[in-house]
Length: 88
Image (cartoon, rainbow, N blue to C red):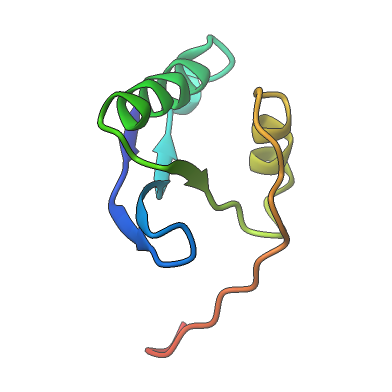
């Protein structure tokens, strides 16, 4: 599996936050706890590095991703809409 985690300046928190941008597990290896382990590693890393928060974004029509994140010990923060300024 792979996870991409850029750091973002969270101006409302006046600190940096980790944003889990990409999370991918090869289909042949899904449902084996790899995604959950990656998310937990990101959470522990962000906490150890002193970041104020760790977030993940899921597209509104990605029911599988949303269901996955809801099974984790995480609280939904808000519904977010993303807008692209450079096309699709």
